[in-house]
Length: 161
Image 1: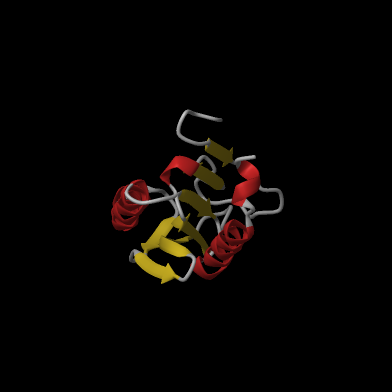
Image 2: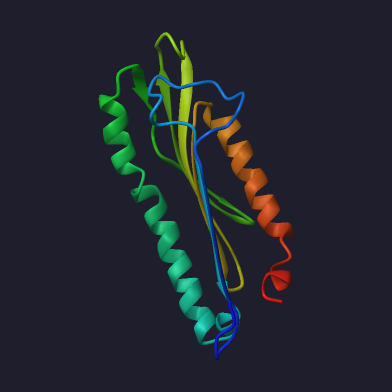
């Protein structure tokens, strides 16, 4: 959308069904994918860019903190037999925070579930995403890496034409 200062774009994607993905003990909880992409060409230069960077850095700090309620909820879910610790990884192209749970029920015997939050920034364009999948953390992080790689290759200039 063109404004008097530049061009703004926002995109949201929310999906709750992935064919072929194994179910979780809590069918209402997984799978889940949320992606948010936002940017504004008016914020590509200082001092506005500095505000975007500060906002992004605060989002990184809050990413792991936002998983704390997930730990509390997971501890009360039937079928969850172990709740892992929150892990954070800073990547060259983004930041990931995630926690893995072990489940054991009829639908998902000796299975895993992972909740992940991811963030990335290129200039004033920011990507945030959430995954909740009935997969172990290695497989979930692999999917997150694909999302980050796609963001790296995104033609941002084309979004503002």
